[in-house]
Image (cartoon, rainbow, N blue to C red; front, side, top):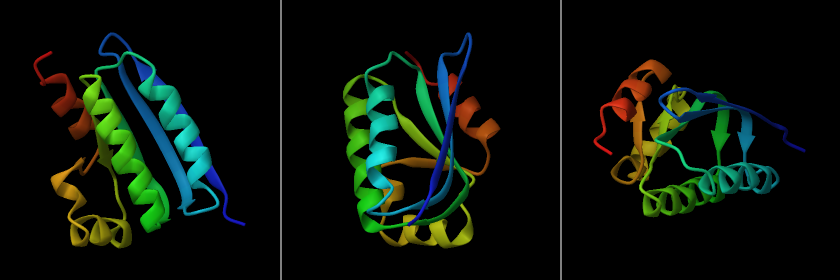
Length: 120
């Protein structure tokens, strides 16, 4: 059974939530990820950075869950962005054209700067 490691932090005063994720996102771990993302959707934030530096694989169901959460956060006036995708994950992200739905950045620092520059 796959294991998912998730840790969260909130940066003040920017009110940006950073979620560090590690492991494999598939049918067995998507419920755990959805639980975390749902808790974030219910919070006021200026953006959510999903740091994928330790994510080895994301299934189609995992991507679907991320898209759904992204749309729900967008409706609340915020956004999810992705960072630090390994080549295998990044390749699927672009192949499936998720770059048209969720923005990605090379580093957490780049994502933070982009979210800080968004007019609220």
